[in-house]
Image 1: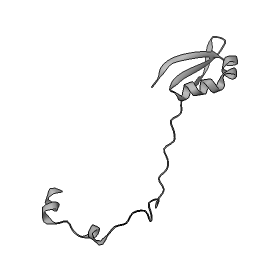
Image 2 (image 1 turned 120 degrees about the horizontal axis):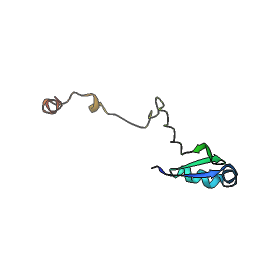
Image 3 (image 1 turned 135 degrees about the vertical axis):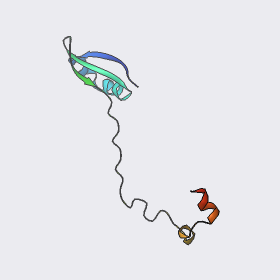
Image 4 (image 1 turned 90 degrees about the horizontal axis):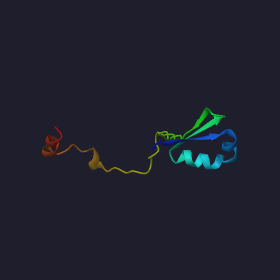
Length: 80
């Protein structure tokens, strides 16, 4: 969700940094300018995707011997 840019001077950005970070985290794009020249853009970062860890489910799931038995012919036919 990108909302219209808001331009702030460097002085205003230093004074209101917490508020500007909140605006950026809400999806707004905040532009910081030196005089009338834009020099920086404050935008929300997407959260990093958590890495998958091998064996994370170890001990949490159980299977019975029925899991390893072949499917009956009628069910197997449904799978193609």
